[in-house]
Structures are given as structure tokens and as C-alpha cells.
Amino acid sequence: MSKKAYLLLYNTAQLACWSWALAATVIALKKGPAAVYESAAPAIRKLKFFILIVSIENLARLLPRSLAHFSVPPLTSSCSKPLLSPLPSGLGQLSALLETLHVLLGLTKGSAPLALLQWFGRSNVLFLIVGSLPQLRDSPALAPLFLAWAAADIVRYAWYAAAALSPNNEAPGPLTWARYSAFIPLYPLGVFAGEMPLIKAAIPLIREKKLFSVEMPNEYNFAFSYAAFCTLGLYVLLPAAFAHLYTHMLRARGKRLGGSGGGSGGGGERKRE
Image: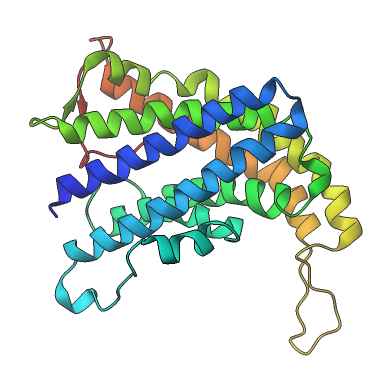
């Protein structure tokens, strides 16, 4: 499989995943806040695991033989069902780590630390916090969280897929405009109406349960408070990351759209802002 074909496969699969998640969220909203997590999270979890397996299988074919000393069993009916059903939720989100690997392998341009930061931020909220605290699964903050994430990634992966499909690695102008404009309302919506309220509500529960924490004394002479980490994240790390990423995207929007108001965008090999 060629690099372009692999990127087209990956981005199309991600587009399908987030389209399903968006549809599941919208349908669940009619049933109330408690239905949002139960409907959208499995859609994200199962499809992302499928993307992870298929992408690793094809990514291995692009690597030099000296680096491709691993294999993944095919997704036959005999192995996929037990893997998809009881799969730990964190494993599904690993598919997003492939974008960091894509940069490191030179398949796409961009910042590996930035991609890793975005992956960790979402995974922390969705799996370590909401996934570990059932009390938060009926939170009204889940609806804007899933809606913002899904809508933003539908536009983003549609742009990547369209560019990879084009012989000139160029996405249509309107799609490029949407790619560099949709984040303006969606990113603040996801952070301020979704992530931050969930983290704030989780901190006392984490502190009470001592979730993911290590107390002294212990043989390693090491202590870690996940509640303190989340507090630092809520009031320092998340606002700082938001400011950095938002200004980064605004600069990228200015460079890409410039005075044209919406030129064609680059393909799978372009920088993944």
C-alpha cells in the first residue's frame, strides 16, 4: 500500500468514526444527558479500535523491513467480536496516537509534541476522568464535549481525505475554509463548556477516592496526587494549552486563507494543524 493510499484509508476511517459519534450524540440528546455518554462513547471506542488495527497493519507495510518485525492478526469474525466488546476504553483512543507516529515517520508534516498533547488532553478527560467516574456520565457537559469534538474532527478528516484523494493533493476551497474556520467556535465550546466543567466536577470525587494516586510511605519514596494534577490542569495547563493551540490555529488560518478567503488546501502530506 502506498503512503497516499494509507493516509486516505486512515482519514476516511476517522471521518466515519466521528460522523457516527456525532449522529449518536444528536440522537441521544433526545433521551437526556445520561444517554449521551452511553451512546457516543462506545461508537468512538469501537471504531477507533478498528482504525488502530487496520492502520497498524497497513502502516507496517510502509516501514523498512528492519522496522516491521511485528504483525497484527486479521480482523476476522472469530477475533474481532471478543476484542471489540469488552475492550478497555483506553485502547480505543490509542488510534489517535498514530497521528504522532505519522509525523515521526515523515508521513505527514506537523508537530509530534502538539499531536501528543492533543491526544493526551482528550484521553485524560474521556477515559481517565469520565470513564472512571460513573457519577459524571449524566453531566450536561458531555453533550457540548462530544458535539464539539465530533464536528471539528468531521471537518478536519474530511479535509485530509479530500486532499489525499485529489491527484494534486488539494482539497476544495470551501472545505479548506471550513477546516480553518470551524475551530473558532468549536474549540472554545469543547474546552469551556465540556472539558473544564467535567474536570472541575471530577476533582472532589478523585480526591475522595484517591483515584490514580500514590501515597507515602512506599518503597519508592514517591507520591502523586491525581486530584492535584487535575487541579493544576484545570487552572493552569488547560488554559495555557488552549491559548497556545488556539493562537497557533489562528496563525495557520491567516497563512492558509490569507487574502484569498479560502484557497485550496494541502493533502495528506501537509502540516496537520
